[in-house]
Length: 165
Length: 74
Image (tube, rainbow over all chains, first blue to last red; front, side):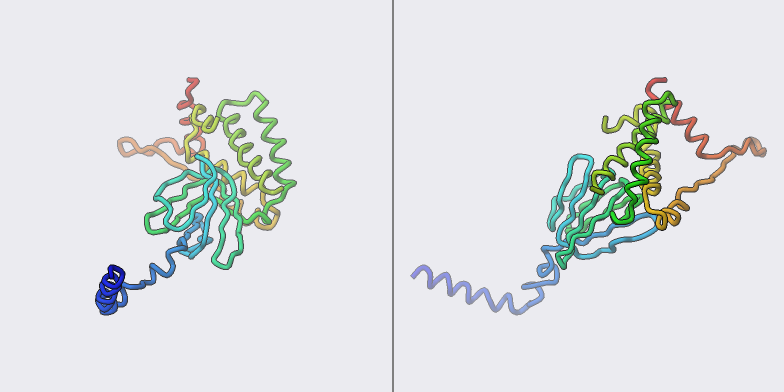
């Protein structure tokens, strides 16, 4: 008896929903499991509000994966890899030199970096040569600023070398 | 360790510039030649006082001096 009453209530509720079909199923509902990704460099937009499934970031606070409906946050990025899982299931990887990722409440993700390149653009030999160079400066007796700059270079290069393996 | 460059007086802007420069230098020949053009910065500035232009200085050198004076060891 109780269930019949319930189903009647459901039948009564239905016409109201059909009167405004747009509210039943909107475009936003249909694509709610996607993130709109913008990956921008000062000189180029690699992604421009493109729907993707997941983005893995190397944030200063730790590695993180961002899916749709992620909690809004601002993350400083380490020099490292950003991994993008596209709608087709393909995975794209870029090495970013550092910047910020902003997760907005409506499943929008904006990543800003100074330089970003796909991994196949890097030369392992150039990385190795620069590591020896930077290590020389770090252990040398240059100014405090020169040593600090060489340490930054080492941080970037070691991350790059680990990514290229 | 994470932000040891801060102790040396370096700004975040400088940190990013160095990281980007390192990334550019690690590229293969083709994309590197393209990218390294972005590394050039040749701004100069001068202070004007009572209608007269002062000494013209390169911005990069002036920034280096400013960062050295910001170091914690000073």
